Image (cartoon, rainbow, N blue to C red; front, side, top):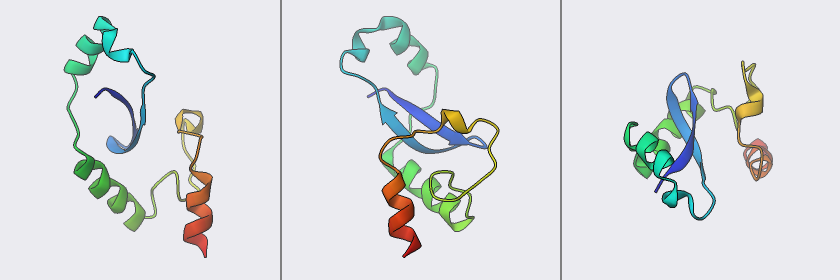
Length: 84
């Protein structure tokens, strides 16, 4: 599966699935083959590391260089759940 990964300081912490049909894009497949493959456990560990450091950009208010590049759908509920 090819996904769009999100990183902070070179640490991957979440991803978005790509639209159906993306595997038919040969250029995208060649580009994806050049990058490291991540397992769900990698993201799980990285996310908890960032949470422990209070540096997870989806859960903590942070000054970021490019906040517009963060995923913006479906994450607001996490802040509300963790704040109670």
